[in-house]
Image (tube, rainbow, N blue to C red):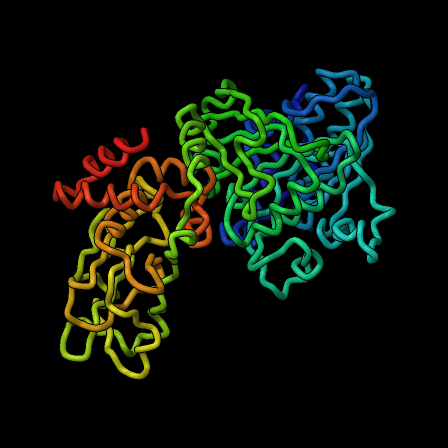
Length: 518
């Protein structure tokens, strides 16, 4: 369907934000879901646009605004409406970037209208729109403080607002090579947008982004976090309790946050945390203020950003910070299951027999139970032991098995089960790649350690802590390796209590864990 843009005119007294939304909806109907996904193109709902626009305040009569990955400029419109109606601003310079050539005519209609609307309110709005890649046009700012600095001519902005594209980039992508200084592993394009924007801020500038929450933890974003928190301070964060509501019209299940930042002025500052269930209560969010050190330790290696949504969450974070142990300190390791199903296809079998080992898949692991065999189509429960497979098998000893992924239907992010070597007489056991396994490389975990670790990981206490920094369905071995743990003797005591009671229900697990800590 071709849109005749010249016929899509603003209604009488229509607000620019609503006009931008109308243009966006018309365009969205002409493209496929596959196109949206491959381009990371998910337009911002009006309510979120207004919410983000109202977080910005200025005390000057002339401002410059950048909207990278602007779509139909709905975010710019919402912020400009707020500036025009709520501040003394008399002149606005708006710069937009958008790569979708088919969307540019619609964007131009919106920019023309915002200019006219500004004139009606005695505010001059000058717009410049670039149909080019924001990253490739501005990446030199990432190297401005090195001998390769080439960013002297790049403009700085008072205000930056963005709903950037969300998708992973291949390591061969030109944008990855351009932003290599902030990349470790497979990057998501939104993080490069954020990094460049942070360095395009004027000295007293403000930037506000709506992005996935995935950057707040995990190894692949560690270099990015180090870069970001070196250059900016977080002023405000809004969290949504539901994954489904934020971009519901595009069926986006990614957990998103809204974050407002400014150039870093020091290490001691407060952060405003805002919270809503979804869009329906966005106008009346719960708000509180916390010290920066309560949500991020700038001296830590991982620089994990914790985002508590309640007093209970804050209490849990303080409890974990009081522990100085972790798996590494207890000479306990966590690794990813070495059996990759498609590579081992010829070695997998449905029934046990001489020369086979049990193979544990994600579905074999439920809370406090490693159940085997559990027949499921396409998931053979055994693996042949031979020269082709033996390098992927583990010695049969005590482990804690942990799902690497939770599904949208799981109530918990952490799902772990004790596995004991006496569950089979075989010398080997197979652990599929969608599971992590916890073990002691030199020696073995005793039964109390296995039960204690499994109980802690399955507990509401650990699940709630994990949710304060992990906003996706992945359970990273790196995060668990660094996660604070109580003293080893306490872990063993929890395991001993469970074994003594012989009740491994989650009601009892939580009761025992809470007895020690809550």
